[in-house]
Image (cartoon, rainbow, N blue to C red; front, top):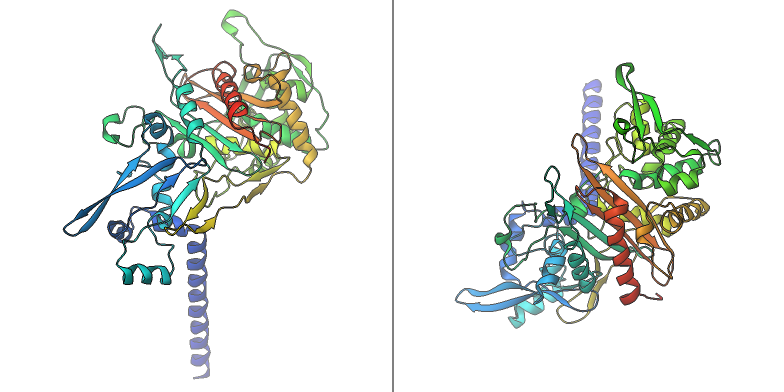
Length: 502
């Protein structure tokens, strides 16, 4: 009998522990995933409850109305039809952030912030007041950090980019892609564009050509190409055995791959068939970064080892589970398989199985600009109740502390400054008179295809214009040729129209 009581006690304790674990997991899920569970399409209760609420308005940072509602009385009550900005360029440039009535854009403000927009943040007193007065329930209005004029300008600039169609001589196209602009001091997102786009007033007219409903800025995962050399350089600068070492670039770097196969890495411009081999000779890390020497960074990655390179990538947010307050972001990933030297070398130059979103690429540039501090990206500035009181302000918040030693970020700044402003730098087309523009180009090969995505990340190194950006143009070619000029024009617009001392 005594043994039976002990066994019952053990089972009871086990059940109690399981219950406690379940409660803890429920609390953790609600705390970290609450908005995600609430806004999911599987929430049929929310879908039905929306019918009885006038959704709050959505404004840009300057008070420009991006989404409002037209309310019509019906026999059963009322209907609230979403209305959008009267400027078609503004509608198209902001639709992937604001969202659309048909819900074609996943995780837009319209869907992800539904709890605020549809009045579910109201307290009991507010709900009782509306019930007693018979007033129609209205959700909170949201003011975004987005600048609609900047967004419209970027859309117009993207539509002026033309690149050759692969395999078709003389035919040009506007490439798909993404641009993200944020304040590197606060994390405020000023623009988040995905192209091609569509008009929320007639979403079905766009069809599915080019996936216009897909938000490339937050959902697109791309090989970062040579922009990842920011991470590799940071790992070298953090390593006392490698920092300060010089390299020899003889035009190629060879490393062992699987089954004893030796494979080769060369620099852009190399064409063995025509006898062209790009070699830089003796070279230090700073110059190698400026000219984007693949051989140097491949060699450095192998010397670092996969473990150290992975550790540095994780410090920048690769493999992190991004749980931001108002942005749903696909996670960037570092390869997790057992690596050969050639795979590690390819990772060091931003290829292999590395994947990153344009928002994350912008965050990496922002962290360097902010001396190692990566701020959380923010789309919402504040939520305002229907009576005009501010219910909630979304203050700046730390995402990651990338460096404990800020001098590493300062060194990377100088490397990125050289890339844009010193002769031979691959990002010279992004240079802007009178401003310290820092950046890194990338020409990222699409695995298994004869295509190259053009990439540029960079920032203005000035507290009066604290702007960072990323530009990704799919199947466009060289980042220096195509992405850097777009970055230049956006930086020019920012310094002309949005310069701030805040």
